[in-house]
Structures are given as structure tokens and as C-alpha cells.
Length: 394
Image 1 (cartoon, rainbow, N blue to C red):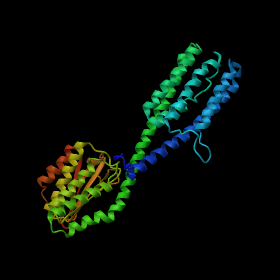
Image 2 (tube, one colour; image 1 turned 135 degrees about the horizontal axis):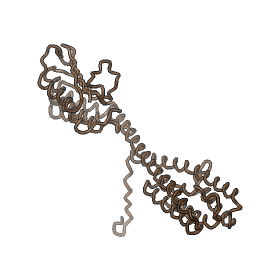
Image 3 (cartoon, helix red, strand yellow; image 1 turned 45 degrees about the horizontal axis):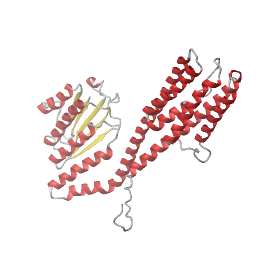
Image 4 (cartoon, one colour; image 1 turned 90 degrees about the horizontal axis):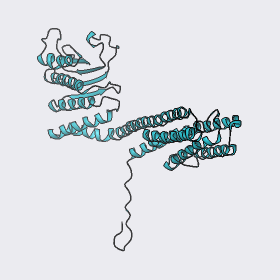
């Protein structure tokens, strides 16, 4: 902007976050790699088109026009093919380049109807125009690939029916249209999936970087505040923030999104109520997804197990552990044979004699009852002086 007649004041744009820059570089490299692979297909299609014309010269009504169209295809293929040690002459990731290749494909398809007799063995460009359709899908998504396929298909229909007047032109044109729609939409869909995977990988890498940077700084500071602060409110706030931060650093996009945060919330709440107890949460990355009702049922059972550990067992350390359920458990209960997830709440409390003790209402209703209502199973293992473990299968 300009202030009066004085010098110009230029405001530099804010730099993009490092994670965003890394993700954009990753997407650019992904698309560039796919376009390089597409150039191989383009070359193969061009070679087959040249061979087809060479083997069917007797059916050519206008050979000079056919050779001109082939020359046009060769030039376009040449400027879009990466050279050794450098990229192609035209930027394949430019919208202008994609539209240019599609336009040449349309021209070649329309011209196809002017060079062959009705007895032609194949179309002049063969599948060469499909490269432009796939480039549109790769660059701009499934919808762009579909639109490009329809436009290219209309050009083929014009060539087959209007220019050649073939009785079976509709069949050939619609067969090509189906092929191009499949190629364009699949290219867009695959790229969308790959971009999503690249974004998830970027999140994991960013999380690892943050974990390295924060582990020796912020987390240790929060731990020191908890140990040394005489302000219980401040210590509780530091404890909550430590749990939230550890939950973020340990999180994974493949883990059940609703389950892990709830476990950390339960752990933080228990530590606020029982300041001498530390609760750890470990969730396997491949834990199966759970619906909202299942998560609520498990959270209720885990919460009751924590309460029992603090109130009756006077535990000072509790671990909440969750992983996929399988047949590796030697004494897996029959009721849990079809379970998909296993959750354990284990403490170092005083324990009790599970065989002789009368089961409390909290254990019977809040743990066993909740799990049974959700289609799961619960088991309690304990011994005097050896702590208690509540095992849940769902």
C-alpha cells in the first residue's frame, strides 16, 4: 500500500506453516510422479497408432491428412515427455497444458473420420486421447476427468457417425466413451485417495516432530509444576494439559477417534480426584473402530473400574490398555470369542479375594451390566496385595 507521496510500504505475505509447505511439496511430487507414468502410456499409445497407420495404408482415403495428424500427435507427445535430466517442455501440471492436450485429442478424433474408408481396421489415434482424459482426472479430480471423457467421447461420436456415417458408429463411439469415463474417473479417484494418504502421513510426521520438540521441554515443565506447586488448582491444570498433550502426541489417524480421547479424559478426571495416583493410557494403532454407543459403554465400565481402584484399592498407578482382540489370549472366555477389541484396566492397589468377596453393585451393574448390554464381556482378576485387573471384550 502507499502512504501519501512517500515511499511505498510493502507488506510481505505471511509464510505458510512448515507442515502445509511439506504437504504441498508431497502432493506436487505425487502428481508429478503420476504424470511421468502417464507419459509412458502416451508414448505406447502413439507407437501403436503409428504401427496401425503403417499397416492399414490401403484403407487411407487421405494419407497426407493422416500423416499430418500423426505428426501433430508426435509433437504433442514430445513436448509432454520428460527429457533426460530435465522435465518436459510444457508444464504437465498447468491447466493450459491439460486443455491443450484435450483439444488436440478432439482434433485428432474428428479428423479420424476424414482419413479412413468405411472398412478401416482401427481408429487413427487408437487410445492416445485417453492420456489427456487421465491427465485431467489426475490434475483436477474425478469430475474433471468425467467432463474430459464426455467431451472426448462427443468428438469420437462426431467422427464415427457424422463424418464416416457408419451404421455401427454409435456402438464404437459409446464403447470408447465408457473406456474414457473409466480412465478419467479412476485417475481422479486414485489421486484423491493418494492425496488423503499423503496428508495422513504428513500429520504423523508432524506429530513426531512436535513430540521430539516438546518431550524434553513442555512435558517436563508440566511434570515439574505438578510435583512442586503448592497450588492444587494450578497442579490440576498442569496435569490436565499434560494428559491432553500426551494424548495428541500418542494419537493416530488410524485409531478410533472417539475412544482414545475419552480414555485420556477419564484418566485426567481420576488423577484430579486421587492426586497420588497416576493413570497411563496406551491404545494400539490398529484398534478397531467403535460406534458411539459402544464407546460410551466401554467408557462407563472403565470409569467404574478406575473409581474402584482409587476408592477401594487405594491404587497409586493404573494402566488403561486397549488393543484388537484375537485368539492369542490363552484363557479367552467363551463369551468373548467374537470380540473385536480388548480393554484392560490394571492397578497396583491392595486387591481382594475375587472368589470369596461378594460382588459390589458397581462391579455388577456398572461394569458387567454395561458390557453385557453392549454385547461384550467383562472379567475381574484380583488377589490380596497384587492389585486388580478388569478385562473388557467388546
